[in-house]
Length: 419
Ligand SMILES: [Zn+2]
Image 1 (cartoon, helix red, strand yellow):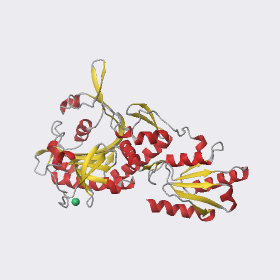
Image 2 (cartoon, protein in one colour):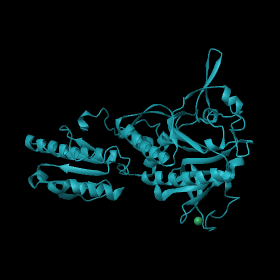
Image 3 (cartoon, protein in one colour):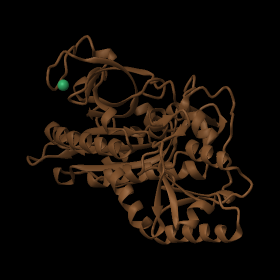
Image 4 (cartoon, protein in one colour):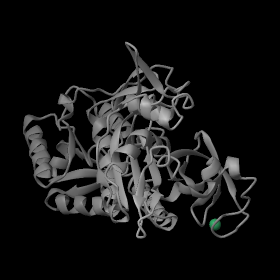
């Protein structure tokens, strides 16, 4: 894509009301635009990142044999009364139309349980798992953290249905592993902890995935060797690492990037979701739910992966893998820069091509650092004279000169090395 055609421009300053790092950087770099507190538009660059994150999540869910569906965001009151949550969930957006009560879904247990329950009759229909990636709503009192705490946000929610606790537990452990692969691909692998959470009656099966971040809202106690943590609320009950029993737990601030619960029959009982077992006796179906906010994850990545100049995207979720900057003044060099862009695009690379002629080199470099695309190429009269281009990784301080004839292979190796 040519940068001169991009509908967004970078900004030096944005509203002082945006205090979080993720909102500051994402708005300045032109990834998102604020409509109101906790509600953002995803601009072309931002939507590319969000879509990449969601592709990674979708791939992971499909590996769990979960099937994708899409449920309505607009929901009636009745199922929420069945579970007794209509008046209990304080973040529920309620809408009154005439004398009809509706809400905008913050989660979908009330919808998915009777829905899938309608297709479960015997033990032969189990286990089953469905998921969706969808826009959700929460009436947050103080949405001040950019994409970390939105009133409207994107989320993947997975629901699994089982005959026994053992089967549910086995699936739960698989989800745990798959979640870790998602965070790894999103560049958060070494700093995301499987966290034992206080889940009221579900404590045994209630876990969060917490990414260590300097300005995170949560506090966890981590075992660095196991990548396991306990959250603040259960610290008193669980003073050692649940895996290796080490008492060397270190206090860290963190951002919750996912959570998983074994709901057991909490939702299937009120909706009478039962199956007949091998002895032909009716039993409650057991259920698990597994959340992961994809827009929140995008915010968390920026909170952690940035420097004083801007965002540092991991290669798998960057909006483009290569930022080609042309500093050519002469028309013949501009033509060669365009040929280089075509060569890279035809080679299968996703390239943002800064061919603007009304910007200084300094402005172009500052924009590139702010946007955070992993690899920067600079083509100028100087490099053209030696049939080369200057290459620099986003976090490297020195650039190197790469001969054009070996560029495609060189870039392929760089991208593979960073994945
Ligand atoms: Zn440990």
